[in-house]
Length: 452
Image 1: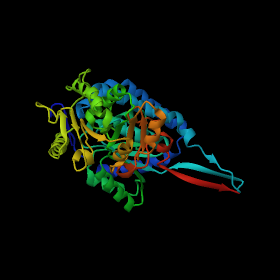
Image 2 (image 1 turned 135 degrees about the vertical axis):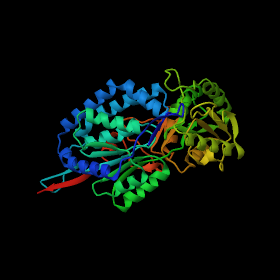
Image 3 (image 1 turned 30 degrees about the horizontal axis):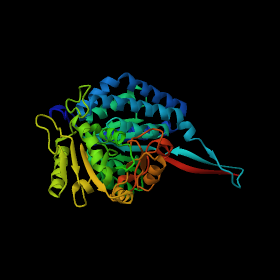
Image 4 (image 1 turned 180 degrees about the horizontal axis):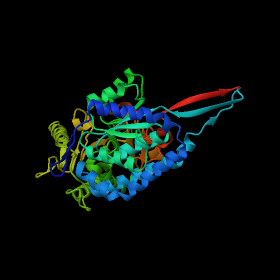
């Protein structure tokens, strides 16, 4: 597996994938560790997770630099991601015991209750776009619930995978409790099928979700799927246009637009559409695109050459189908996998920009006649992850966002993840939840205990 710097295209390092012997060894270690870890006191698990959080904060600069050089995230965003991982660890260290405490239920028994017991070993199949946060938001609750974790990370971030593995070891987690494996898709399917793996969590593409769900279903294993998104960013006629435009730049171009919850479809009421775009355009033109290791860089390259090629195809085909190119629309010349910040106006059905997820720095503008039409456009997608609605009347915007079919609804703010709140989608954006109370309860056995 090659680790490639997206800012230059240079190979940083190459790693051999795990062979069958290494996979068998990891499974055996997980199977041995699982029953012991499941009986480990919450306080002891929490202590290890707090140590891990402290190490993340201590090594923030080094880990952020690794993330930036391997997948292209601007260094200041990378540092924020490491800090968020530490926060997630501390959140579950502080609250897991309370969330998973027995719940007494009054029945005809002398004593009856609901308990939460770990399932065993969880296989976490994680993506490259948030190479630390995605892992920690899955692993921290699973581990605090008493499960062991096997990590199958994206093949283009092997250094991040190995660094995360080392962090768990250095924090003092027992052998077999958390292990990273450098494996491919075929090996992953065999892992899902193995009886020593009890559940699966995937963050990835819609196609990957279908494959994982099929294999997990064939073996009757619980899975959580967080897949693609084509989130609407709806600006109503009474919105604060300056505030909406300022947030829109971050919501679309953070991480070079490579986020499942990035604002992707900008649905504007026709009466304010031109005014909003006048405010948005200069902010996009002012974006500092360049070396992601520089502190003042606001947007770096896409993570891989093939991702840039796919995005450019979507833009070209949309323009050919009638979309108006207001900004950008082409790869930046020179080394690395950079793509110019782009705005497509007049996006309509039949265009890739209307139907497909644009995983990169491209704004797709859809113009709505009125609020009813805006709601129709917001729901006219096979995805249902996040949604953002803007209006000076917060109650009105809340009614609007409640009518959108999505797992996350934000009013006058950009969609983002928070350890305190559940995260996940509906429709082709997947099922199940990460984070919050609901996330830690995904991979437990919800048991009824009845005593006469």
